Image (tube, rainbow, N blue to C red; front, side):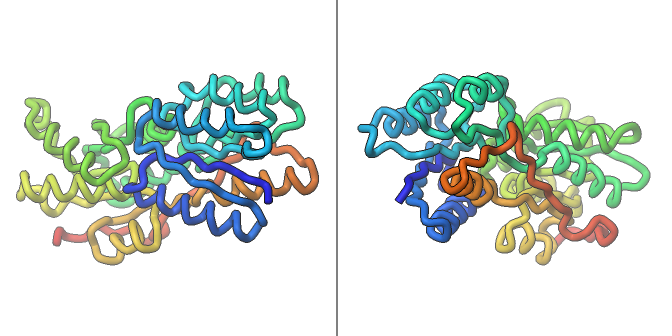
Length: 297
């Protein structure tokens, strides 16, 4: 049975757990042996994990590696070593500069970047803001890590869609609920927080949005009625939070690991190679026309 390694970030992140589950279920359906490893958010740990598979005896090496990078460009050396060892390389939710060269140097391997169209996810959040604030206002955005291309693309899409009439401030977390809570608590201690009252809080994922809400409700009771927006939109995560009134809306993003393993399975079966980049479309939940501002709970 062909082996594929799936490298993910943190086991405590709900979207990462979803991707692990999707990888295992898709692998079982496609006849692939899937091994999932979590880097616990550390780039060095991730590099060591992946090199362990690349440097294994030839018979024990995976046919491909699917990885969501702790730091995207930081895996270039790993990617080049994987390709030299005849291991396919599918980078999830990141945009890097070395993929075209790697594809040219190893034309028989499945090498691609696959992930959510994060700029469109940001645009969707921008349209959700506009539905809540048709006259404009202040938007506080709790983002992922600053060096993440998902963070950058979602923020760019948000600002592009909001345009004039909105003022946007950004804070950084690490995709966890605790980091969203910490980012807000730290921001509230700054002088700049005294002159910027948000009209809506945008979390670049549902966990950080929930953490931000928890912090604001604890530390600024007068802001208890603010609407919060999230992203990821898992049925038992963001969608449930919308149903409960915790979030005004979320963006549903598909798991990346299943489609990545489909690419590997197709390559193994037919030698078909993927394009340099594959983008998966997000959607608003609820649909944009159904978003309404509700009072705080």
